[in-house]
Amino acid sequence: MKRRTIDKQKNYMVIINTWLFASGAVLVFYNWYVGFAQKQDDALSTFAQLTLNDSLLLSTVAIMIGGLFYSIVILRPDYAKRQREKELLELTIEATHHDDYTDTITGRYNSLFFQKTLSSYLTEFNLASQKMGLFFIEITGQDEIPNDILKEIGDTLVTTARDYDIVARIDVKRFAVITPYIKTEDIHLIAKRFRLKLSEAENIPDSYEFVIGTASNKANHQTAEAIQDAASKNVTLGKRLAVEK
Image (cartoon, rainbow, N blue to C red; front, side):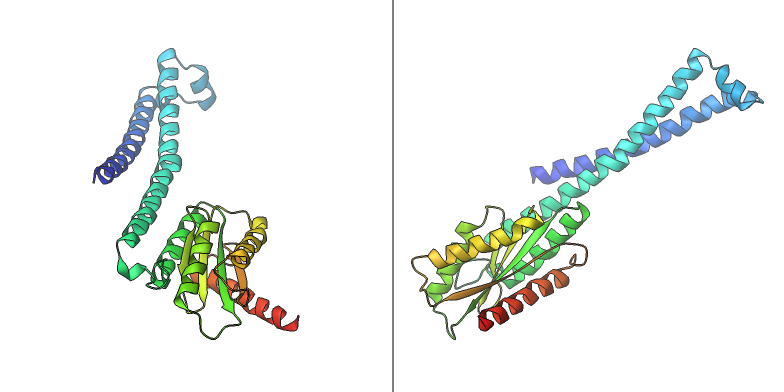
């Protein structure tokens, strides 16, 4: 509650700051224009005959315009970014107390939470021109998978992922991992690490195989549907290559 109040105060401060700088700049410039510049016929002579008072007024206008620029270009986007970060945090906290967001078998996030989080992350990272990755891990070679194996797979993915990555079970045989702040060139290395940790897990039999499809929010994958389609296509490609081997 306290943080929400602080966020509202910051928003009011940004709005007030913007209006003050804008109003001040207009009034000071108008005062200078009416009091001095309007009396001059030649624009060059106007600036040549500036008094100390005129220079101070113009300097004040420049400072206010700079403050206005700072408020609009820096403060407001920063506030908007913090608002989105807060929404993501609230969504994550809500998920820990919300059965509808939890997969009952693995105890990990489910498809509903995954879809909400993916959309929120894409909005945030696309606006900030930051990269994020998506991994689809599909279990192959098995018709039925016991619950304890599914739980072990989910646990292995969580221990392999970073603290702020999102691990979810989104289908019967498919898990997903959202990895914020990732370099595009590191995606394949991370996929290899997931595959290695799954193959080394003591409680996952060697008969279980995994195909990992990856994608990132590059130019043509900036919507939830597009980035998921790209990851799914890579899963299909991985299955095809596995069969050909």
